[in-house]
Image (cartoon, rainbow, N blue to C red; front, side, top):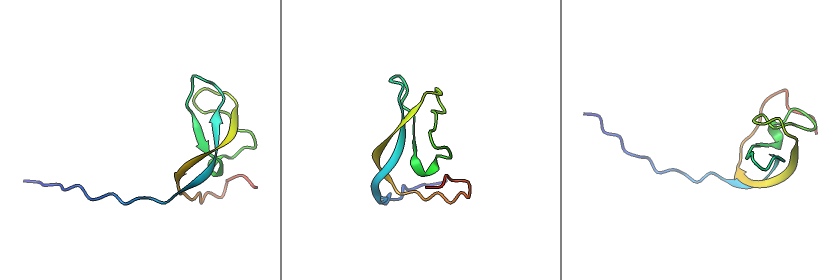
Length: 70
């Protein structure tokens, strides 16, 4: 018999992160700024314009060589 015990989840460190949010009221799309490859991104869900903002998120590092230059 297989027995699985849930492991305690560790709290991931969070910080205020720059994001892009969809401007369409009916869409809840957003993305982290360090994962955007364009100067002015469009929403991948509804193709509306996006605006810059902030959100408290877990820390994630983008190691892609194609990320936009700051």
